[in-house]
Length: 328
Image 1: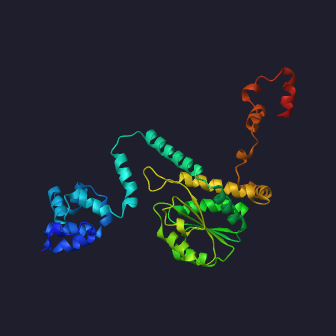
Image 2: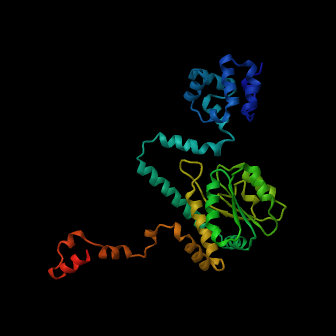
Image 3: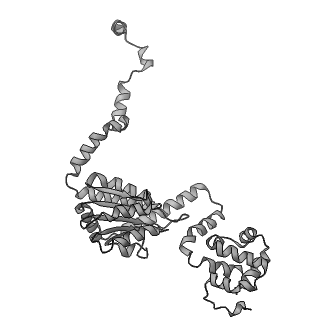
């Protein structure tokens, strides 16, 4: 028989459960099986949620925790959370926020304030040399592949859209066809090409794997990520950090979107023939653009001044009445 107090304090929870399983009661074994099969889900549960999910009392849950060598369920749950801290942080933030009554306007204002804080940190952290190297790499690359998976796929698509007018060959690898299809596309790259990779919490491991496979192939990688602790950061030849600290979600994209705009602006500023290309592209796209939005500033008021006024028509001067009748 294994006594819970004899188990090492640093023993992983799963091994702790396996060792204690033979001595657990049927109800405790049911809880143990639930934790082993649903560790992440169990880690997100309060004691009452866990008890309801397994169909036991709160007291039984605490006895289960003590049977594993913990003082109670809070310590047991902390062991479940270990290793999931970053993943669970948004869930805990949302849980805490929902416990506090807040007006929608206050929640939105707080989110905007967080975005402004992220933007300010990102702006102050810009390194001039890194920015120049990033723009140089983009403008001198033969081919550019923008890689983003998960939520970063949408960001990668916007970066591709922003660079496309100024780069002859830029493509987005955003997960259509799966990661193996992305790998097939990146396999074509050679020295002189460029990969721009985006990854933010919660990082998609396939993005990391794809960039790691590029090491040693002579293809430089420009990385956009949130911090030096990002698993993508060490894989970049050029790394631009964009703070994306969220309030209630796993990541705040506002600052990343702003950085994408900023990077595309810098490329446009340096690109040869940027004005000519922008003019030609706009001319080509005219049939698809809303004509009202293309009117010069002030033209709306001018149109209003010359537009027929039904009320004024009834007040036509007598001398002009014949001309009006003939014209009609």
